[in-house]
Structure formats: C-alpha cells, structure tokens
Length: 486
View 1 (cartoon, helix red, strand yellow):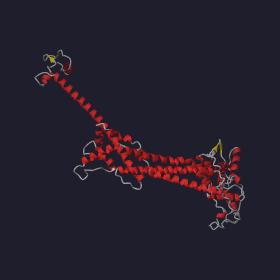
View 2: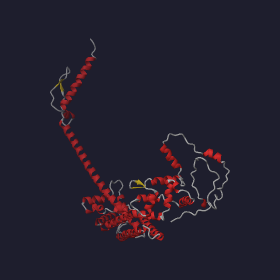
View 3: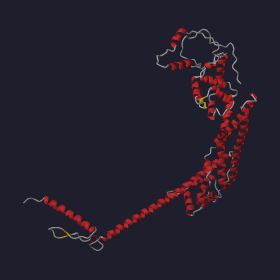
View 4: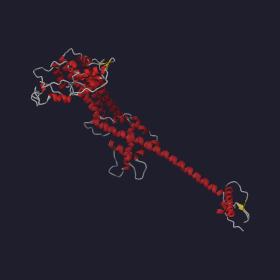
C-alpha cells in the first residue's frame, strides 16, 4: 500500500490572501516537495512585486443579480466550497464515468467502488465498469498531489467528487494490477474465440481441399486444355502446373471471341453432366478461410499470452503483499484456465499449419517457414478460381437464354415476312405476273361524265374503291368552287 507522502517543512508561504472570491487559475499545481532543484525552487516567498489590492479589484468575481431559488444558492455555495486539485478536463472525464457506476438502483460512492475492487465483487462491478474504471485510475502525480493535500492536514471531505474518487482509489493496494487481472477474467473468451475460430476454419478448408476428388478432376481438365493449346511450343507437354495458374484460365480468350477457356470447360461439364460441375460446393470453408488475416490471429494470440503473463505477475505481487487477499484464490484458479486456453489456441494453429504442410506436397508447393501465411495465399487462389468457375456457369446460362430469345425473335420475323408475301400474291390482277395482275381491275367504271363506283368485294379492292370515291368527291367540290360565272 502506498503511504502518504512525508510531511515536512515544505509549506509554501503566501505573500497575500484575498478577502473575497477570485477568478481561479486552473493550473496543474506542483507539490512543494517536487520543486526542489527546479526553476521554481525559492520562487514562492512571502514577498511579491504584485499589488494585492489592485489584483483583487481586477480579478474579484462580481455577483450578478439573479432570481435563483434558495435551493440553488445553497447548492452553489456548497460547490464553491469544494477544493479541486485535478485538471478540469480530467475532472470532467472522471465525473462522466462516475455517473455510470450504479448498482441496486443507486449511484456508487468512491468508497463503495473501492471496496468492490478490494473484494473482487462481481455483483457490484460489471466487466464494462471495470474497463471504465481502468481509464480513471490515478496517476502517480495525482496520487502524490492528493496525498500531500491530506498530509498537510487538509480536510479530504472538502475535495470535489472527482478528487475524492482519485484519492480513494490511490489507497487500494495494487489497484492497477488487480483491475487488469479482473478484466482479463471477463474477456478470456473474447481472446480465444477468434483464434480458435480462425484455426478451425483453416483446418476445415485444408481438409476439404485434400479430400476433394472433384477438384482433382477439374485440374485434369485444365491440364489437358493447357497442353492442347500449348502443343508445339516450349509450354506444351506439361505434367502439371502451379496453383497460381488457375485464375489465368479465365483470361485465355481468342481475339474477337465472346467466350474464354474457363467458360468452355464449364460448358463442357454442363453439357456432359459431369459431377465436377459443382465442385465449389464441396469446399464451403475455403472462401471463409481465405479471408482470415493471419497477422491479426497471431496478434490476438500474442495479446493472450501477454495477459496471461501479466496475470501471473499480479498473483506474485498480490501474494507478496498479503497472502489473505481475496484475489488470490479467484485469480489462481483462473490462471490455470487461461494457460489451458493459450495451449489450446497454439495447438490448433500448429495443427492447421501442419495440415497445410502435408497438402502442399500434393500440389508440389514449397513449404516456407511462414506456412500458415502461404496456406492462406493458397486457399485464396482456390477461392478465386471457384468464384470464377461459378461466374462462368452463370455467363453460359445467360448466353444460352439470350440465344433462345434471339431464335424466337428470328422465327417470328420469318413468319411475318412469309405472311406478307402470301397476302401480296393473292391480291394481284392485270397482266400475267405483272403489277396489273396483282392490283386487279380498276375499281371504277363509266365515261368521263361521271365516275360511278361499281360493286366491290371485301378486302383490299373495297378499301381502294372507298379511298378513290372520297378523292373524287373532293376533286368535284374544288371544281364547283372555281367555276367561272357565265
């Protein structure tokens, strides 16, 4: 337990004292014990060049007229009597945090919080409160400053709420170590869950890749196609290829062609109803494993180990301070659980890396030291190829559907042309094979004295006769309007 600083003849002399309330200077005050051998050493004396009366007149707080209630005036009076040593910004942050410390429907006092910390009482402080409390712990400077205030015989009850909280927390033995260890007990699953999840996904993906016979058949199709396309060149006659080749299959496309090699292979698999067409469905964990950030996973494992080490160190420090501390039995049992979690996480990752080293041999892969990183790159290539495979199937289906629609449109156009040609041939007249034969006899008969429509049959002839009659009527009307008077 940190005891209060040693009191001695270090009181700062006051050169003057105001007789009324003054505007405060919100500085970060240095204790007298800390100014020795500094630029401040000897500056605080009972003499000053300042004029006390002038300073008081200039800086005195003038009460403004107000209609505030009696209750408010009492509250303000009490507040002005509080002593605030901490930085105002720090006071504000601590006050906000303290407003959230509640249990049993009431706001926790600094003493209640301190007792809950001493006894590791989870019924009072939640994991969220513990995390928040760690951000409010007193610094060594704050603890010394408040300790000196008490050592100088000042009344601690006159301190502001934030100052009282910091003073109370500074009196809890090993509070930093205890709170860190306590918070670790509430977040162990958060550390291990992500590590174990990534390791399990990686292991499952490698196992699926190793056991898939369909994927091997797909590689055979790619190898055969590649050897055919490269026949006669130095690239031909290949016995195999690196896994990086797979994404390149979709880029093989003759100039002017609408298809590529991957679409050709998937079309073949579809037409022949080959089982390998659905090979991506047999590897559900490959795409998920390819998204794993191994650096993040390793960092999480590193943090887990670091917290376990801090927990062990806290146990030693707490036991040295008091073998009857309530933290000892609780943290000791948890430490064993945490160490087991670390061992399990390391074993899972090592197992996944070992599995990849085995499958790497099947694909003629190099096995670098960072095998887990290479495993993710490897799985990423397979996942990319699987996505391209499914895209090619969708493109083929879309092209087939478009071809069907084009064929339907072409058939309808042909039918319309045929009907039009048939109709035109049946309405002919006049000379054999000529326009007169197709058009038929004129729709009107009679001399120049007048046009009389003759009877027409249904169809185009009747329509032409009506149009002609209307035209004749319009012509006769125009003539009657322009006739010269006799």
